[in-house]
Length: 144
Image 1 (cartoon, rainbow, N blue to C red):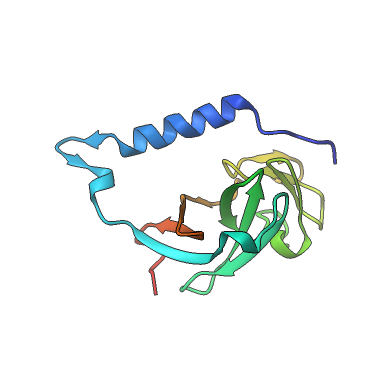
Image 2 (spheres, rainbow, N blue to C red):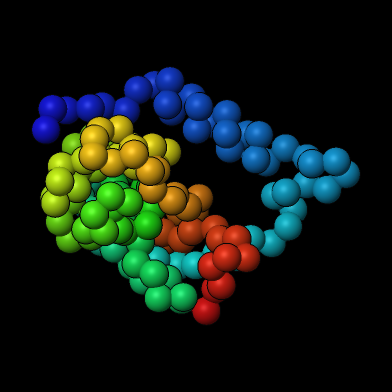
């Protein structure tokens, strides 16, 4: 698989997305609400360029990607063939390749990048606090 570095445009888009997320919505700030955070693992457990995994309280497995020291989290199963991306995938820059049929996804957005994958991966907002990787969850995923 050819190297597919994350562009500075993607990094700028993520900063913009976070800035928009933290802006006020009407009279109520989103960031003032306490987020449900689920701890996944220590940040030193996953080396740069590697994929780790964790299990959410509802039993779903997520893949944790370390892209140049920045962590991203998605559902673990490939949307095409239900292969485990953490067990059978390969990370190259910000692109994860499924080991079954070699489809690819951008781990920063979940976007399907290469056939046969056409459905995006579900991604989760990542919080890094006190050397821990946590994800912010919605009501769909209940914290323990």
